[in-house]
Image 1 (cartoon, one colour):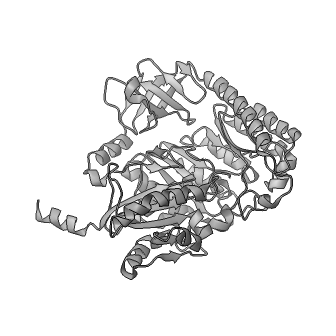
Image 2 (cartoon, rainbow, N blue to C red):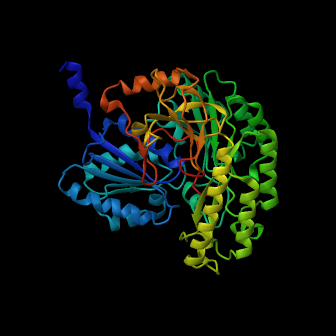
Image 3 (cartoon, rainbow, N blue to C red):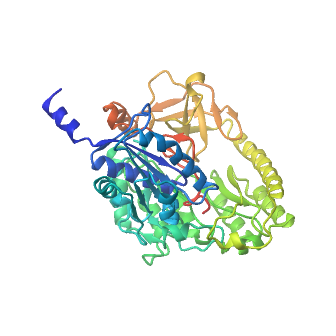
Length: 505
């Protein structure tokens, strides 16, 4: 071992693991947490490790049974921590912001609790807990530093999240996120574009603009067309091949954004537009500030401007007071909109939200039956829409870790411009994640496409070069993926790995 190697080993404080639950915003925050820990001298724990020296939970308060899942995970770690002096456990994210001292009361072996507004304090709080030998609970009430000013340990060499704003100014009755993330705060356009240009210089070829209500960007800086201008500016960045964004809100989705999407070559023909309910009466009770006619009007305009666009959505079934007639209106919108994909949720109470106190809560049995009808209808539509892709020639960006059966089938996986997942026959020449292949679609299933013949072409890219550099680096410098909800994923799926800025956008 050289003297420099010994010096690097001496600087390492230990290993870390970040476990992420919830939405894309949490995934992006976890990249910041990883960057902070690595800056403080920790290294990523190998996947084979039984437990890291520092385990961080980045929590979600939106998903059902979020607290039970957290305490179950904490309980599993308790005996490992007891048997391993010096091990530390930290809990951050939305549930930490919401529950605060409750976490340490229920799990006294937790060392640090921090909120959504003070992610940057994580290394300091860990060190303070170690020196003082007592739990540190620090929850800021407002944002201390915009997340993108913090160091980052990105999970993908070729795709990246870029936050344009944090927080949300909406008051949806089912959602607790504005209480936990605060009011919307926008970044300056120059800062966003500088970050994107820096990412492209590193080899990134796809970025996803991220915000709790991404197309409301500009309300904090006094420019209602700021988001469409940002999209057009992304189109002028050399080397940036794909631009996506999540999640917009129908209230703020204006014609200038549709025009920018249609006119910007690297803006992908894909849109995630949360519906939540097709009933205007239920939308009013949700405080969603748009109605069925407005929503379908947006869909019509998008299809007219971008005929090849694939649309996806979020839908809540069983909101308090929802009648069979209201549910029929949701089914009507699904038939009219013909979403390529829909993320459907059964309504469940969230303490602290107005909807939790509403009368006429729907019995679970009724909600389940409606949910199954909705899923069946959407499966049928998804399959029909995917069948329209058979015979098309598509350019795919090769993905990492998205085809669980790729090794067994001798296939690779990639994302089409409209974000459809495509499994394709492995070409004879080497292909890396981030490279681009051109294929003919031969088969459609409800949730993926197949290209079973030989690839028409392979284009090696700077993004593939970046992936190759990362994977050839020493093991401790490589990423090991992020857990989103429960499953492990690698690169951030362009859209949507989880839905909406908060999952219920």
